Image (cartoon, rainbow, N blue to C red; front, side, top):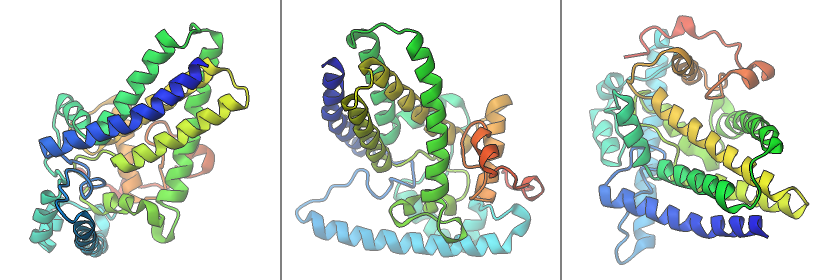
Length: 309
């Protein structure tokens, strides 16, 4: 009963958090991610549908231009592994850089970890993921009625491994499964992310984060209905939210100018390789799944010269 209450509360709370996130973006005029720049902070006025159609047409034209420019830059700079710099984009079309800035794309990336944290938490998706994770943890610890135990110690690494497999599968099949490593139609925003210069403040879109949340929530409902222990389902749900938080935050760090060492440096190097060759190095963290699936074999080091500005 309590887990059902949690899931129902989560389902009811999510739209409120989502709405608050969007309103926060609109109030602060923040939309740092190119993936959500076209959707955040809109004031639709009297005729929202006409405005939406006009914006969609304008946005599509802009991203089509960016895709063509990105392809031309990649072809003209093979020594940079196909990577795109802001300087190269400005040289090709300075107007589109200003247009992208107007939609919320932030090319002035954080240089300190504190700035990354602030940028992440003031982004709609960052706030949404963090809020849901905190809510889930509080429920599991204080309201679930079952203390943490040995079963949770098994559930956490199991759920984490499931996340890594899912991360690889979604990134491989949906985000880069079409010709030339492009995304399926619903996830075309991921192509835009790859077409932009590498250094920009990058957090996954609020729309994709919300859809993913409700999918996992539905799976959790199903698991409980099939007889899975309520508390363990909550632990798995919290682990998934933690994984989403780590993934999206690491992604923002990898696209920033923050000096990194050790594990974070390895993550950034692997992610740069992924942008050089989009069908390789698909997981954000450890390469376990990439090694298992054979997607870590692409040697991009000799093509990375000049990539890091």
